Length: 404
Image (cartoon, rainbow, N blue to C red; front, side):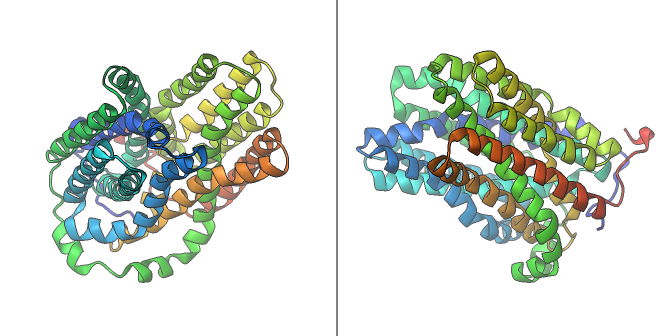
């Protein structure tokens, strides 16, 4: 594995704050406000509960559908313009949801949001891979993961009073404005000098995926398992609270506590990865996440559920940016976007599969067994990642203290 960009001795971390992290923060504040509204809008337009859930799931389907084509868009447009285009596309899709008077238009809007999310995610990861020196990479990626979490946390807080005063449609309008602002801030990004050259010389997607098939089968499988267990905690925790008969306020408080711990640890995890290696986050984060899920399956009181929620926040928070960091470490200089599109597809398959696995296990057994099973899957993921991360390390882990 080779480093995909030169080590820049005069790298200025502060120069990234507004142009690099501003757009995802603004966009995810919008998404955080709009995402909970999708099910409510579908119900308001006459959908049954099952249909409303299906429409909400179209965002994940759109992301899966857009993961591989995103590499072509990012390569042709360049990362900066792809980020701007994705934000503009999001704003347009959210305006369509704002105007939707039937389930078909709402479904199209939600699916379109998923597609643009795939382009946005790939382009921002590829941009950071090029512009940030390897010795800072994990911190840059974990900070990006933390910014996304913060945006998703802030969004509902701002969106709730807007919806309470002006209705559901106003929530989509607010989200569209945030995405438009994200596009404007993304225009401040400096152009990458390699974009035009790489767009002409980029290899075919199928060729890149085939040449790196061993990585996708080994580490990629670990990423898929990791992503599934991460997504599982978001589904199981509120369901478990409801299963124990907790009221909505207690449910939300426990979830918010877990998310607060999650958001607070992103930079610590990135620093550990940069200084000591990816293995020191990949394995512990999954062990702790698995312990939280297993413990949750045995809880029956508010305090024990809260303790399990704290473990879930610790495990997920310390691993913020891990998947993006591993992908960027392994991405080739030529065909980077194509590789990252396949890498992101593996993670998104895990994200999408988790609710289906939980539903299937719960249907044939109980929710507690589903939580226990997903915890065991997290431990399997830990062992799998531990084995393969050690065998595919970055060229330079940046352990020279003078470089920091």
